[in-house]
Length: 173
Image 1 (cartoon, helix red, strand yellow):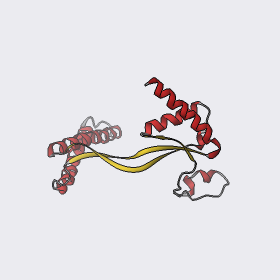
Image 2 (cartoon, helix red, strand yellow; image 1 turned 60 degrees about the vertical axis):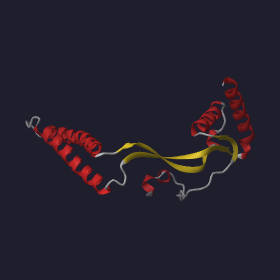
Image 3 (tube, rainbow, N blue to C red; image 1 turned 180 degrees about the horizontal axis):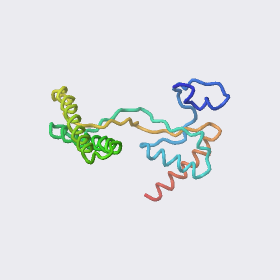
Image 4 (tube, one colour; image 1 turned 90 degrees about the vertical axis):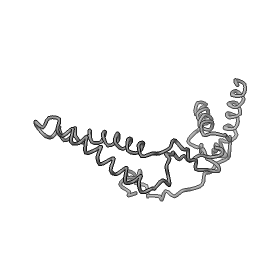
């Protein structure tokens, strides 16, 4: 990233390299899901805790791939046709706006070209896999647990606030 696009380009401060660094602070809570950790930080913010000092750390990260469905030639080509139709329609509309008196011909040409090219490229791409990956999936990075950390000067108050939240949550369930 060039300095033109960094925050330091607009200040007189010398540029610092933004290297990955481990989190700092003391743990004040540990949660089984990111949603619970987020709720804890929201509770801290609602109670005027200095949340700028808070970090949520995902511990033991894992990549989870969830299979959404089976691929087939019909599904691949159908999806490509729909996607290509939208893109072709967009291009056709742009062409018709800049072609005076052309009517609907640029729209139809764009639509058909979009469908055709999209289906050809999708068929070529799917054909090269030769059945090695006949499914659609979505990948997500998750953690086994999420720890909430804060700076030592605020840790005791943070633990008290989160203990109150846990007690209130246990009482309502």
